[in-house]
Amino acid sequence: MQAAPRTYRSWKSKAPAARTVSDAVIVKALKDTAEKPESLYGRRKMTAWLRREGHAVARCTVDRLMRDEAMNGLVRGRKPKAGPVPKDSRRAPGPHG
Image (cartoon, rainbow, N blue to C red; front, top):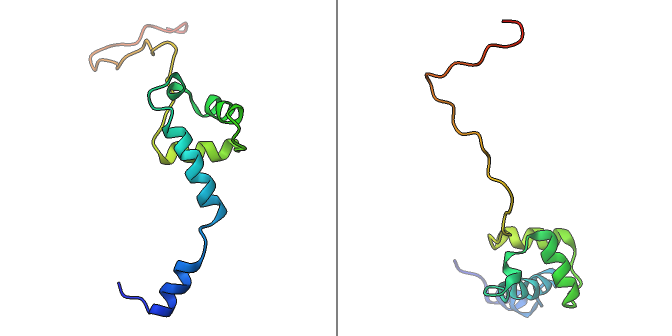
C-alpha cells in the first residue's frame, strides 16, 4: 500500500493514544506473571492484584485485556456428574404414571 509522503509524516509525528500506552503497560504486567502464582488468577483477583501493585486500572480494562491475550484463571470446583444420556435409555416413571 502506498501513501503520500506528507500523509505518512503527519501520521508518524502523532503520539500514540493514551489508551494504547496504558494498555501496553497493563499487558506487560499481566505477562510478567507467567511463572508466578498470580498467573492462576481470574479477572477479579487480577484486577485487585494489579491495583495492589500500583496500577490504576478499571475492572473492564482487565477483562478486555485478559480476553485479548487469551488469559484465563484457574477454574476450581466440582466437575459435572451427569454425562451424556445413552440413546437406548428410558426415563424413570413419574408420579403420575
